[in-house]
Image (tube, rainbow, N blue to C red):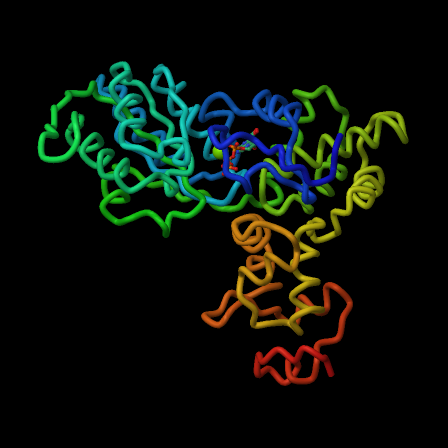
Length: 364
Ligand SMILES: Nc1ncnc2c1ncn2[C@@H]1O[C@H](COP(=O)(O)OP(=O)(O)OP(=O)(O)O)[C@@H](O)[C@H]1O
Ligand SMILES: [Mg+2]
């Protein structure tokens, strides 16, 4: 397994964004993706946690089934790894419908979208991942397709161009985004149901881990699962990934059984700390504290300092750091909280300790 950064990430067409497949500053390899697919719950009953979303979605789908109709368009928003792709597949399975998978970055021209839409079967689920990254003209075509199940295909160029209306079969659009705030309101409003996915509670992640361990044929005790869950940053994808790394360790260094001691020794090797911060999280915090005196510093500067994409820092590291109360996003930039200094065992410069938020580059 390669834990170093590679540029050979999942193709733009693939599921998830550039930020989607990482842990401990690495890009997931194909094996990772295959295992991930194998661990996906197949129906709503198997889907753990997200009680509200599950209950609401269950109603939406049941009602549509009872009417013999195509389900309303669904927007899934939430941080990477919380189960958006999984839920989209569940929606198709529950509706007994085929699913077509594409993503915003793959649709750069309205024509790309027209080609997909016009080949949909009746009732098909169209999963549009990273919907916030679609081009403007495609987005406008989508408005009409969602509302009227119709698109205008433009033939020709300039004054001679004509719009040929094309009827579409009813379909269900499932859009996924890590950034619901970036969606233009006209697009957001065209979804009949919006589900916001929350981070998972540790007890829910324990269930995810037990389920996955069972599927992977790994023996794990309650405390071992709790240890991994506590460091999984509220995210099932991370829980599953940590489980697999701990399994490796248990196989090589012990009898294969995962206990609390094995889990904590393994996660030490993989640089996942007791609070679940991985190498990227710590790199961000360290840069913020050591290079910028705790901030405020702009996101782009911070990203350059840790050698990462802006999006990676913003979508992968920050939501967790903010949620943990280690970092704050302010209009003037990113600022470390006193808890961040404490977590890294550093002393804030006097100006920070005094609470005026002005970064003092040279410390106290
Ligand atoms: N509620 C859940 N119960 C059990 N496993 C889950 C659940 N949600 C997600 N998972 C697991 O986590 C993994 C990641 O989920 P998924 O790919 O659906 O996330 P995502 O929200 O689409 O992420 P991204 O934004 O990166 O595309 C899946 O392999 C799945 O096994
Ligand atoms: Mg996904």
